[in-house]
Image (cartoon, rainbow, N blue to C red; front, top):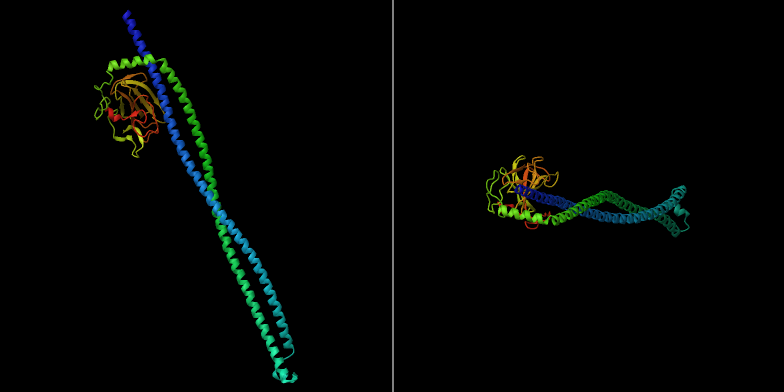
Length: 410
């Protein structure tokens, strides 16, 4: 009886320690989820800031262009004003020249009328009316010279008037060209202002989006801090139990994982062989630690149709499972006795066949592959983490965070 009681008590102690460990692990998973979301938001914020910076630069460039066009328009306004002044002066000169021409033409015509009214003038008239030959020649010469002078004066005045009129026409043509250029530049300037206003509005919208993202980051970081405080309390409170569980796992498994008797996956690889490939049927490996762009991914992606069985890579305890609409989507996290964690992501929603706290065997089916969360197509996302199981979106290579290369363990 006493032995049975001790066994029951022992089982209860183990169960309590497992539940405590699972609670801490689940809390860690929440932090990882928040951290991933924070990293995604930070990248999104960075993209928004880059777009905002580029847009602001476009606004500044447009402002410079508008300023340049406005300077040209102002310069054209000055030239147009000067031309208007010159045109007015030319018109005044033209009016004066026209008046002088009309006046002299009138006088010449009056003299001509008087001469015509006096009758035809002939050499006989000059001879009979002259007192002497000298007087005759003088009178005829004066009449001829007067008529010639009138003609020359009128011709000269006409040339001057025509020159003034030509100059005025040239000024008016120049003004018309300047008016056309000004109109064109004002049109371009107006279009630039419309574009500038649109870009400025975009900057305002991006600033608001940036603030919204930052507010979400602040809230997640606040939540993380609260979770971290809970973890510190739990780790301190259950320090002895966690250490006992670790010792028991090392004693039972010799510090490693079982490697035989599995029903799924394969152990083919050049690593330690403690893990099997967690999916048996897949088309190809779409990502092997790094994207084709060279960006770090920190996991192996096995391209497989939705509904393909996914297996535990080694013996372990299920730490957490979740159905998310973002990030890993439907995923499972298993803690192994050697301190490593394996993460299985983007499964088919509702397909998880294990529960937190459950001990699973290597090769045991845990879910079906799918296309949930942040996924570009049906596949299994498989990653391996070491203590302290942290994650960094900005990691450049294995070792920059807690993720390690799964190929080292196949």
